[in-house]
Image (tube, rainbow, N blue to C red; front, side, top):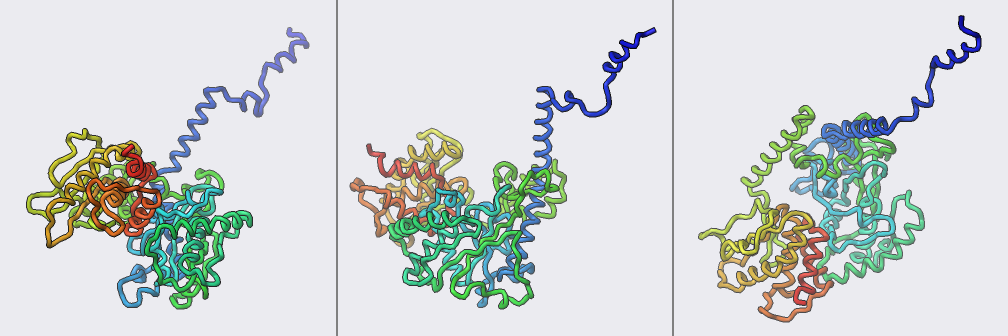
Length: 498
């Protein structure tokens, strides 16, 4: 017979119901499992399907906002056209690269290139590389524009819309309308503190001087100052009664630059949003598998109906078909950046033959190749630079050969019936090619566009290079030479002889 003293021990040995301390403290293996579980949950949320559906949802908001603010309505026939009354609709401008995901191509009235990095806190700047002067002309013609962009989780609007565009408006107003009574004002979102307003205002005279120092021919048709206005999914939109005239006038004394943030703000985790992803069109290199906004909008139903596992292969096929279609149609045209200098993607660069147009082609290829193999003919130079930053660094070493090859072509016999034409191409048609074109413009031609004498002593300065770059970017706003590419050009022009 058991003693009474042993009963408490037996009771202690039996575990009572409820949560115990050991249930809460996980072993290291269990903690690793929880981390893997959370990562897995995040991956199942950030799927291609969820991104595309989020983009589609946000694009619907952009369409509603545009319709209510004098832009193209839900009917695609309401978009800007070449007709006599095209000024009746404010164009939807996609701020690249993200903005184009939220604007179907048939509603897109153009592209802008305002960078959020130019609007970061205490790093504010006015970019002389991304002047966006074409937006001034659109704003005057249509009584304003609607610029569309987005941003990732946690922010209400991208810095490009909250700060970069307001600074741009203020600088252009002071330069283009210096005597206008309203040109000296800076407008920022109400959420930004007065100290930010004061600090940016103090920088404006320097920004104005940097633009004027470029010596560019600027648009002179602006009749009213530009003024930013901010729209998010939290905004109360004006009633759209279908009468375009009733939604035309926003400011009596300004041309509105309507900054429309496409995505709604997500304060917590995407896992709490039922699959919605804020700023889903951002960081496409991490998820898109080569999908572009054009391909998405042309095949939206097909893509959204496909199984998640099928999407990478489907996207690859659609992207290849689109690229082949562009190559057949010749839609990737050569863009003239300066006298005799053009750029394009490699896919649009024809290899010179015996009976062609007499063009000189300089192709900057993504696979590195030895220097001995670069010259493929008297008018064909194929320079294997490599990709990304390595390619930008290699461009610095290749520029002496590129400029020498182009000079030999320009110094050769001329065809009296046509201008000599140097076509510089790279994979995108926007990075290495623009950098090389900048180097050629500075190295070969003076300010009047005349070919410099071989061996002429020229002192290249940052002011000269900035001015030439500003001219190139005005001619080709879609150009996007990386910082590393421009550093290579500066290094070549300013210290390569040392």
